[in-house]
Image 1 (cartoon, helix red, strand yellow):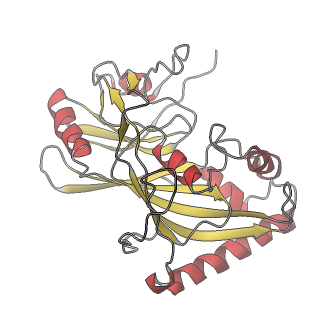
Image 2: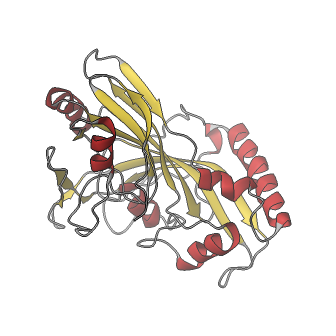
Length: 296
């Protein structure tokens, strides 16, 4: 029997605890995988020796900041903030293709519900769409001299995403809706790209990290910022010596650095693409573009 992992605690006080959730681990027991018995909620409860209350969720494949309250009162105070969209959530994703430099995706999605005590997840009626908005920024683009499918090169981008809503698979579905699915996404992604990253970089996970979360402390009301470690698989893709070609690694690193610098220098005047998906017909005209307020 394999040893159960110890969860990395980012922060803990009498009111709540924040962990750095690893990719591949469920947040809590779920109807989507009823046979899986290992999950963050149970592991953390046993690790701390007390009951923990989930206040939000991350997909199984997503790594990063995950919060649990340590009392029902703290759980309610934190849940109110999520319901009222007062929590700032920042994700980083590796996606197929050259993503737009900045954009806003406004596309309603099916919602979901959570039982605070048991952690059971329940997805709402698919016909009951709820508002969902994602803002994104392209932090760097890469083009490798490797033919993939009918294309002569392999292109992908590092994208920063901020969301106020938290619908089921929101970041993954939103980016896929603009033809930039996440690398490693076996549901909405591109199998050719997933295989390329697995074969050339040894990466076999969803390339999505919940990097930063800002919430008001449930006791003091002061803004509280929490940040996870940069996912090791992202570093592995950029500078790892274990890939099949050292030239490929050097090319990846050089182009990433160059493109990131160009995008940072371009400023907001270069931002052109902003999207609103109110219906299946696509763009409905320009929307306000947010400032690039959080660089990593």
